[in-house]
Length: 420
Image 1 (tube, rainbow, N blue to C red):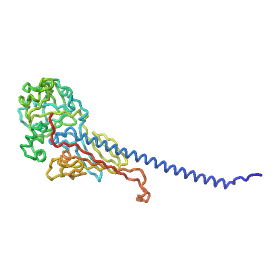
Image 2: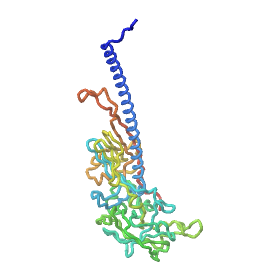
Image 3: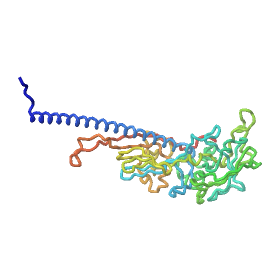
Image 4: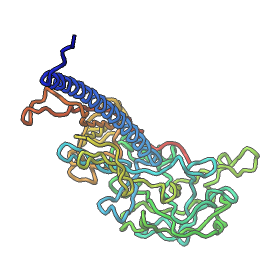
């Protein structure tokens, strides 16, 4: 018996049904695959944001190191590209632009420097020809940097382009701090009004070495064994302060800067660390020109960017908001006390824009630089996952917005610490 074959209509119907099934499977596979890809991208973006927090934390840590023990000083600097700033602080600027932050910090690579037992070698400053005490001129003259060590490797390694912090020793000696407190009363180093006039608050300058030559210390300085003469000036820190550094230079004391208890070394040679007398000026090496970093965090068209010394690095994309707040240990205008009673977990006041701290941006910068104990960061971003509950934009739905936040502690030392 001949079997009955499928008719053409039946074959077409079967093919149509097969195509429908295949199309459904393909659509389901596409949805699953798309969801997996979006989930992977969202996971990558989340990890990127965690990486952003780690980079920010590292920058904040470095910005609060190195010159933190000289925080009471007004550290003057002249950078030709930063004409609006005269004083150096680790946290330099914070602006809120329509809910998004632009944040500027600056620091040196202190932990990458070589200098014997000290990462940042420090030398005694001699201003040849000065009769002292006298005020520093707008452009610092050639100086002689002296060390108590014969053939000091720190001096030998000093090269043109190196960055120096020149400052009055009174800010780092505990005995001088005590004397300063006794002369001003209990509020010394706690009330910023003491740092607005001539005195200890005006005695520091950032400069660059333009040239160096070997020389010998003046014979009257019996404690010093090696020296170099330096001329100052450079492209990053210009040797011109406009006459705004008012703390007088005082010549090192040739007789009383070398008590035996500070000179005695392990081998009995009396060639150890010295403690120059009060009013002496010191030069601390902060690093090569490349060791200076000025870093800006900003949001540019949903792309979070970290700009370092004029070079952009993309940190994350699909970012919808970037918010930063600084937590101060004081309430501006309430006495400016540095009493250390505020916890870094709960600062006295939070600000997202430095103009809200003080309309005078120089004053606001000083508040942030001296009083920031915490920084709180929040990042919002598109997760790439569809939010079906979002029926806006014509009812088509949108992508889910996720947010991550973190709070960082700032090592901000308000009082001078220790000796050389």
